[in-house]
Image 1 (spheres, helix red, strand yellow):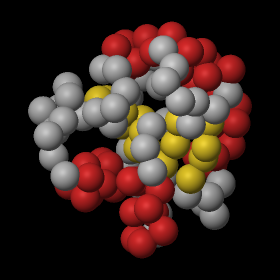
Image 2 (tube, rainbow, N blue to C red):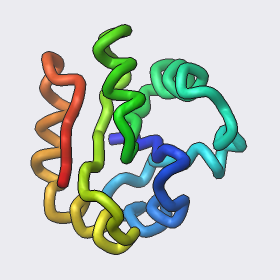
Image 3 (cartoon, rainbow, N blue to C red):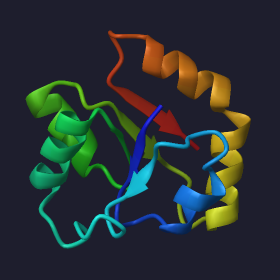
Length: 110
């Protein structure tokens, strides 16, 4: 499961979750933190990443363009990086099932 964390999430999540999501990346670490959402979308599609974000932009793109890439939308308000790490650890099975289900394009985590 390859995750691509959006600019609105900490780049530290790549390291913090490396034991579960070892092929993950962050747009900042790729030098893409100033890129348009559509550029990041295309990068995720070409490189088989699911986009992880805290805003609705990629959800909107999924409605317009379909999927892949899949989108994991974090909807927990102003929460810490540690809280987000814990969500991904606690919901690992749900995330795995989401990746395996071809008819699902958006997973909302809170």
